[in-house]
Every structure is written in C-alpha cells, then in structure tokens.
Length: 357
Picture 1 (cartoon, rainbow, N blue to C red):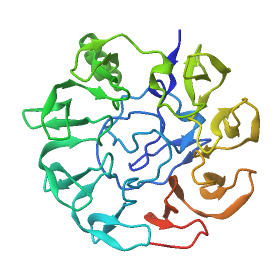
Picture 2: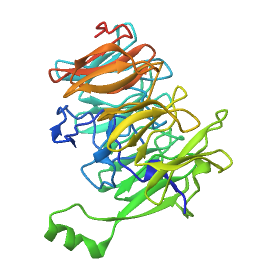
Picture 3: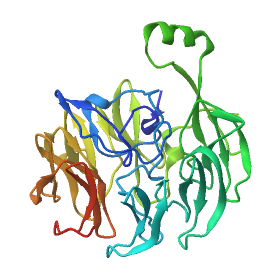
Picture 4: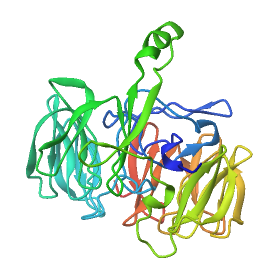
C-alpha cells in the first residue's frame, strides 16, 4: 500500500522552537514564531526525527513543503523582529511592513497571519488587514484555505477561506495543509486519552482525509499530490522505506531511504544509515550521505550541518561555499536571502555569506 510520504514523517518546520536530538546533540533553541501542529514535509531534518508526532502545536510555514526560507514568494518579504515586535523586510534589508505585531507568519497566497494582542488575523503585502484579528491560533493559507482555532472551540482546528469565512467547523485535533483539495486531519482516540495521561505520552490520533467541505474522503494515492511540474517526482512510503513515483503513479525510484525530501533544484535530500546525502532523478547519490542535518537545495545551495553545531552551505558538487559560521539554518535561499541563527539571533545572509539584516 502506498502512503503519501510527507504525511508519514515529522520534518522540522522553518520557524518554530524545536529541541531535537541527533547523535546526542541538542539543537539550538529558537523563539517560536507561532503555534500549530506539525504538518507537511519540511526541511532541517535528522534521521532520528523520522516519526509521527502529536507534540506541541507548530506552525505551517511553506505550502510547498520545501526549503523556501521564511520568505513571501509574491513580493519577497522576510519576517524580522525589532525590539520584540515583528514585521517584514525586502531582499535589500529595507523595512516594508513596520515591526508592530506580536508575531507573524510568512506570506502565503498573498496573505500573512499576524498576531495583534492575543488574537490572529491576516494582512496583505500592503499591510492592510484583510481578515480582522479574531482567532486563537492560525496557520498559513494553502490551496485557498487556512487552519484556525476560534474562541468558542479553542481546542479544535477548523478552516477559513480567503474572505475569513469559516468553511469547515473546528473539530480536529491535528490538521495538515490542503493540497489539491484534500487535507489529512487527526482526532484523539477517546479510548487512548486515559492511557496517554497515565503513561505521560502524547495522545494517539486517528487520521483520515477530508475535502474542502470537511467531508471524509478515501486516502489519496501519492500521484494525487502532483503539482503539474514537468517530469515531477513525488515521494511515497512503502514498508517503512521511501521512494519516488511520477505523476502517473509509476515507481521511478524504488523505496530504499529512511527519509527523503521532495526534489528541489534537480536533487533530493535523502537519509541512509542515519546520514543525509543528495540523489539525482535516477536515485544515484550525487553527494554521498555525510550530514547529520541537511536542507534541500534552493537557488543552487543547500544548508547542511558541517561541524558539530555549525552550519554552512554547499553547492551541487558538495563543495562548501559558505563556511560553517552559523548555529542553525532555516530552510534555504529564496530571492537571494537565507535565514540563519547566530548566538540565538535570527538574521539574513546573501549568497556571498554577507549580512543583509
């Protein structure tokens, strides 16, 4: 049986606090940007993190599931923090939206979630409030819908449309992005709640799939998630290993990897023997597995952990082109910028490794 791979593993999202363990090393603790459950495939992963998760809520960050950084593709806006408030800059480091919000999410589909006081709303790239602050928690828009929690049902997720209308009533304990009209959702199994309290572990979820009206639908095959890109390959999990199919559902790369990210810049980041490397479309390694943590390629470069606790960037030959001067790398380059962490502070660099913010 084929399962869409990005629904089967937890990858680290690009803008949240995560203390993960890889070969006994703690990752840096970064101030969380938003709160929401884990969702689709993401970057910055460790082979030891391949698992289902019902942990603390985390944000939606990129509706492609790839290493898009924290940028707005429509206008290339990047979120920043100034004196405890958050806003957006452009790729030149100029402030476009004044840092005045408690927290923000990256722009997706032309809108960004912002927190005003204790409630969340959505702005456009002109800083106009398109959907007034009214939600307890939110995620970013994907496929025209965004997950939200509302005051009257503050412990359940539902979905709104771009007009702010509630189109799926809050009823889920976990939600993933909508992709091609279908989303994976989860509910806590009632018979397992007591066990989770006694065993001090997160409650187990029962998962199913819903359409844009909230009606349950059969689990889609991997090719359902094809985006229409030429010669696209889509990851899937079978018998505990990950491979790739084409848009017709034919297996192109047989399942053989513990974990994998989708292809980006012609290469896919995959895990074998607890280390990450990069394969081409034939499944052959172009860069052998040698990294504990790694991101997909974006704009010709990929962020990887080169030394213990130190990140830098490699090119498609595996050559280090930006030295490992960073404690962490969020995703990858977008519009010439990448977000990195140094001494607990998130900053932006260009492809020469120069500071932009």
